[in-house]
Image (cartoon, rainbow, N blue to C red; front, side, top):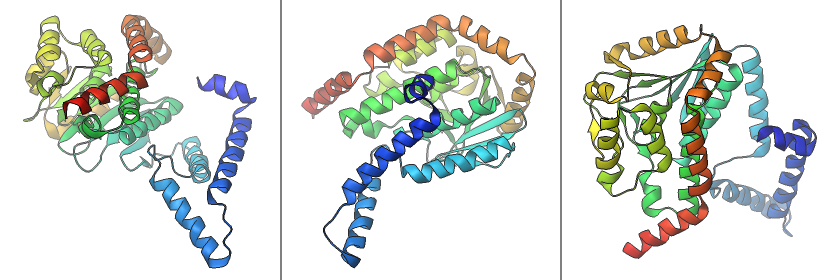
Amino acid sequence: MRGSLYAAYGSKEDMFHAATNRYVAELAAAISTDKSGLAAAEHVLETMVQLTACDPEWRGCLILNAIWESHRSCKVSTGCNQEMPMADLVTYSRSGPISRIVMDDGKVNVMSIRMLNALDAAFDEAERDKTVVVLTGRGNNFSAGFDLKVFANGSANEIYTMLKAGAELTLRVLSFPVPVVAACNGNAYPMGAFLIMSADMRIAAEGPYKIGMNEVAIGLTAPQFGIEVARQRLTPAYFSRTVMTGEMFAPPEAVTAGFFDRTVLAPDLDAAADQAAEALSRINLPAHAATKLLARGPTIKAIRATIDADITVEYAEKRVASRDARA
């Protein structure tokens, strides 16, 4: 996708110039005014605030984002292991052959649109660095799953955007060209559980928490892409219990079910994940990437098909209409 975009404009630089010119033209039209002096300045500032605050995708300023990207590229080229925040929800850090992606929204790490976009940006960094990834959360929750407020009150476009972003991220982790280690620090509800099941190594802290797919227990239909991920990682008996009853499992039983590979004492989780990532960094990464695509090919193909066919704006609109009719 990215390669074809660049080709359409001749080069990455030409595409950026075209985007910048359009951005400046649209911005100039938005802030144009017949006022002068202080009134004109107030108009420009108020308009800029409104444009930023009302943007549902929280994209920010193109120019500032470009400056940040340039600054980030300098850090990457020097191998800097300083933490880089992604929209204040995710931090990315690198140490040698290992990168660490940490979710932290200050609460329960809900998979909102912003969180999903921030995670995708962090995986961009890891793919560029060609590092083995450790994915974890901060606090008592790995992730509370999709943002249920969007399902309950969001627009069709918000529901579509969130589901599409979640499915695409799941598919990306499942087919990521370098190993991904999931270090589960606490509760992992749907979307969080999908990412864990998509990882190559799953290590969980011992503790009083649960993981699973509880959609049917709360009146939702499990998404097809999540079902496909569960089908390729869970044992047949636990697959049925998980998907069709919404049962959640504590860490020891979750290992038996296939959610995790092993558990460790909670204080040892970070060290165990780093140790696993270090070991994985010594395997042949091209062979790993090629074998992963062969082994997971049917699941990858099935998820790609369901994203393209089922996760549409029309589906989200029907979902909103049905929700509003029941209200």
